[in-house]
Image (cartoon, rainbow, N blue to C red; front, side):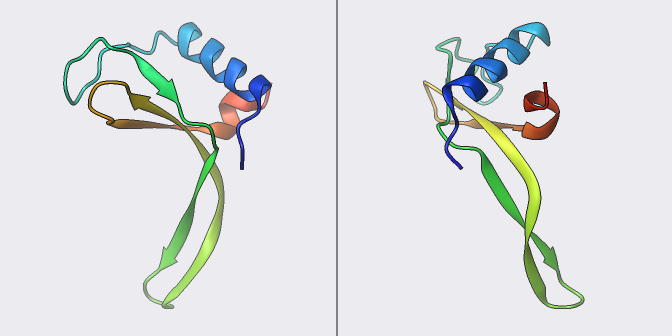
Length: 81
């Protein structure tokens, strides 16, 4: 699902309010982060039943501008407001 400008703004506000650190844990760069332009979803794997189904959870993603490491944040609690 495409990330709307309102969603991106809400995410950036949430990051500031929760003091999310700008330093990348993978490369230690302070180059900053890019907000990925989509809300990502996952698949639920049931190995016992050998089934795969879509998850109802969505994730907001930050991408390190230096090394492209990604950080995932649960979208529903951030975007509910």
